Image 1 (spheres, rainbow, N blue to C red):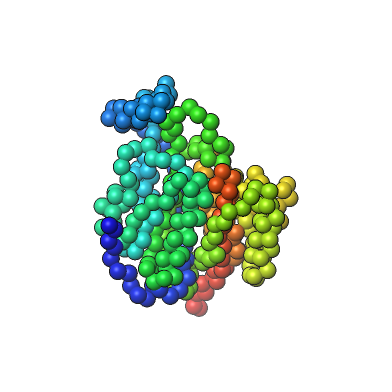
Image 2 (image 1 turned 135 degrees about the horizontal axis):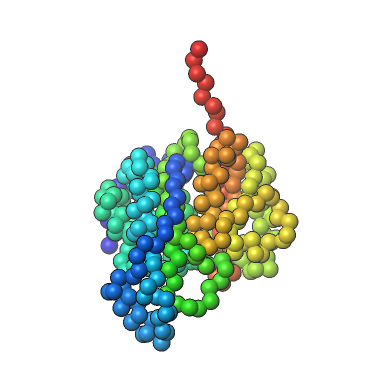
Length: 295
């Protein structure tokens, strides 16, 4: 059973907005400890798989270490959250659950859980849950944590869209309000055959462009980019390879200062061909009005 504190009823109204975001990249500093090496070696053996030769000495960055770095960077935004969501594409390289650590250092956080085993569309599922929780009055403030860790416990082939080459984290603080921040809307995930993705994407871009006075930019994950024609129907920003969970959101945070100046409607999306799911969301960023000084 999960018990959380009752959020402020005022949070039932308003739009979910990204009010702050941080990102981090960490390098491994230590190999697996002996007890984890034994556990994972035995786990692989139970499936008839040998542990890779490089496993014992391989360095790692754990989800808990990434979460700790993100919480440190959030600073003043660490006021109580009604809901905390963690999402990832890979499993953790350490036994346990980093959200327990989060509940320890942020004891006022309400419900906290993870979204996994959904490939590259997992962050969109978590964002959809956050939006729905706000709309139903179940939350006012939400913490969304996305994590990539590069430690690999096997020597099997990994698809390019799922391959993790860096240890990275992104944390977004979201708030139900009517002003400020970047407004999140239209978070969807749907089953789509690969052959239909390009046509559906063209329609989504057209709908996003026609329903707003803001210029539009698409931020597409590698799974989606692999299915699109050579000339996509909108300005497109692509994340760096090797960060399948955080890449789209790293791009968002890196370019956010520019978009705050000019204003922008963002269509963020990715496609997981194994699941046959296309996930996307809209984020509207209104241009900031420069403050005027009294003379």
